[in-house]
Length: 161
Picture 1 (spheres, rainbow, N blue to C red):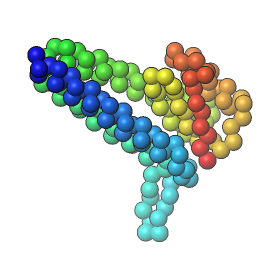
Picture 2 (cartoon, rainbow, N blue to C red):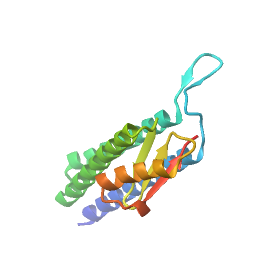
Picture 3 (cartoon, rainbow, N blue to C red):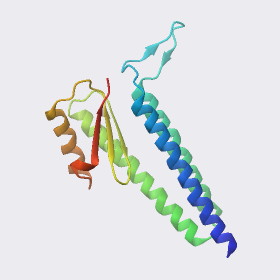
Picture 4 (cartoon, one colour):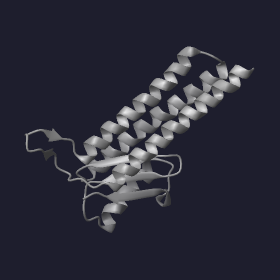
């Protein structure tokens, strides 16, 4: 019985650490401004744009989350832990699919580049456009509200210049 409680604590702690890292990375990239175009260093090396870097970091973080959950599932310690890990794995997968869908739909509305980050209570959208009009914001709100259960009050749009 002690082992089950210990495993649940480990899972809860690992989940909190992953969420903390996700929050830190998102906060960093939402507050640090970089040019939209690739940056070429004096040696001729090309560095990633803000959007490319953010997508890469998000993919790496999600891969780590999925690996941890798969380890829990494969360890098969207890059926409750496995079930909880499977539910969380499905939730992450659905969130990834929704973010990708929203990014593509918003870009199809004429925006150069977009990052969508979904959390349980809010959707953050970083748009590669310096000056956002009310009509631009309305197009983004329309896409998100029509494709998700979020309301306009739950959506935060950040223009990236």
